[in-house]
Amino acid sequence: MKKTVKFKIISIALMLLLLVQLMLPIKSYATDVPTKNYYYISDMDYISANKWSYVGWGKIKKDKNIEGKKISLLVDGEKVFFNKGMGVHATSQLTYDISTYSNKYTRFVAKLGVDSSKNGLGDVWFKISVSNDGKDWKEIYKSDPVTSQNNALEIDLNIKNYKYLRLYADQNGSNAVDHAVYADARLVEENYNIKTELFNEIEPLSYYDNILNKNSVEENYKDNLELVFKRELVNRLGYWNIQTAVRDDSTKTMKETLTWILNDMQNLQLFIESGNINNSEKFLIALNNLYTNNKKIIGDDKDGLIYKKMLIALAFAYSSDIPATPLTFNSPMASYDINKRFDLVKNLYDNNLMLYKEDFKNYEMELLRFIMNNSIANDELNWLREYAEYKYADLNKRLNPYNYMNYIHPKYNQDRLYSKENEKQFNEKYLLDKYNIKYGLNDDETKTPKTWMVMEAGGICWNISRLGQNLAKTHGIPSVGVYQPAHEAYLNYSLNSDKKGIWSLGNNIFGWGKSSTSWYGGNVVRLLFNWNNKSFTVKPANDSKAGNSAGYQLLGQAALNEYDKYLESYFYYLIANSYSDLNKKEEIYNKSLSILDINLDDYDKLITIYKEIGNKTSTDWKNLAKK
Image (tube, rainbow, N blue to C red; front, side, top):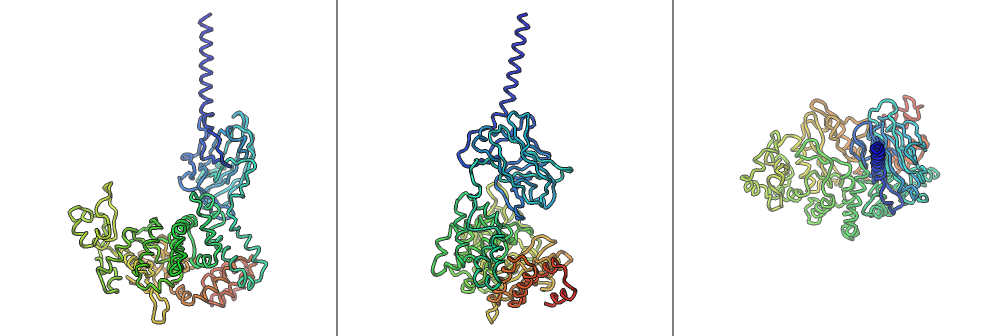
């Protein structure tokens, strides 16, 4: 009898211990209540015990999508990146113990969807539930199916006094690329107004359009250009990307930088004149860094304007243009220290090392954009500029890349370029010590090719072309690469006897008619106004095929040579973009063309409008083609 009672006591104790062990993993996920107005769920631990959290593929990601990249969703048709959130793959489930929070943080706020990096793929629906005991779950939200081409689902749900929060994403059939994300997902205080986070110096595009549409075209040109420019800034950067950049800026300086641009008409116009932006997040960070570090000198009476132009042009080029390096064919986006790069180019200007300093000072923003973003490493920029002058006093020889290298297939990892026994020889030949160019292997015994190795070991057409571009840019001359069949050439800028800008082909074989701006569809080059990348241009070249998109550089330069007319035409073009009536748009684009009949942006928009209106005759199309 005693043994039986003892056995029962032990059994009950073991069951209680087991129950405690099951409960502990769940309760341990709750932490101290934060003191701010909201708390991100990616800063909490999800409950993994009992399969309360799982994914259909891969691993649950905090502050990244399932592929480990930055979370992105479409918001009002705009691709927006998020620093915070959760990445999963449907079918998936995330469960959180919110008992420590939900009496104070009574709302669950998030943007849901399939990560926009999937470009229209993926198909998911979401369900959100709450519970107090982990058994009975109350559904508080269920979505329709969405794909990565749909706008984010924005939710603001009551979770007050609940113990558990569960986020479920269903694969809705096939689970192919169902990369579900919970962007900006957080627990929010009951009375916290999320709109207070908004940067109030900008508005959505619809705000500007509503105002501008009420006025005549001429009224907008005469009285509302500042509003037109602000609209275009929001159009290029994206309303929500700006808001996210301001809110997530750890330095708390982004708001000041944007206010500097937005509240000064000269700054706004310099922004407008600088062209397209491919990566608004990278641009905003770059501009903020540059302005914060250089805001004192851009007020300088003598050179403040050119410093300001250089600063803005560098932010544009750094964020959007691929600088072609002679060291590797597939060039990466720029990743150098942008503040150091600005200082280096500024020093070239200050120390009269720009060949044509006064011309440089008056360059339009489009031309400065070519110069500021150079593929050469920061620690080699001064070396290349001064070594070239040391090597050749004659300017024509100095800027000709063939004078530095032999035509031979490049091998920049060969041991002789890094061996200790050759250090003295190469130091003396290329002045490496004088300019603090590190020689030899890296500390971890790896090899990093340097520009002097291109000169020493030689290269083929693309190495030659890109060294030529770097030589030009370090002398303050706009330069850019182009492609020809099985060949790479480059374009250099100069002024003719009438002080008009012209472009010449360097390392040329096939001429302008067979020069293009993409190699097999990749390594895309941007030329003046980005006109070469219009949908109707022939861009790709390869080993046997020629494009002709490089010729649009000549058209762009013709517009630069009549810059006042171009700006007037372009401002009418921007005004037209704000109107909703297609016939009105057509009228304004034609007005713009009457001022400058080579404004390719107008023709591009007219083609789109003709398609949308749908009632254009063959004669109408023929007349447009004649223009």
